[in-house]
Length: 61
Image (cartoon, rainbow, N blue to C red; front, side, top):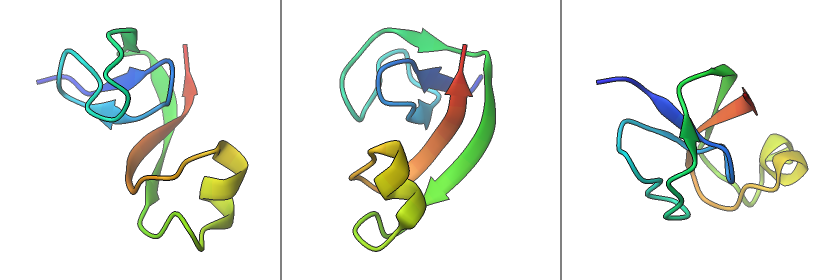
């Protein structure tokens, strides 16, 4: 399976729809990966607007 990043929320998964926001606007062209473990205390999650833990792309094309 191929990892795909959601263009709406940047969540990375192997599914055809985003399990985070239910969008079907996915791309396999992304760069940078960040793992959010504790979104409430993470400065990176705050800057990226992420409120759920998971694997996220930094940039999605």
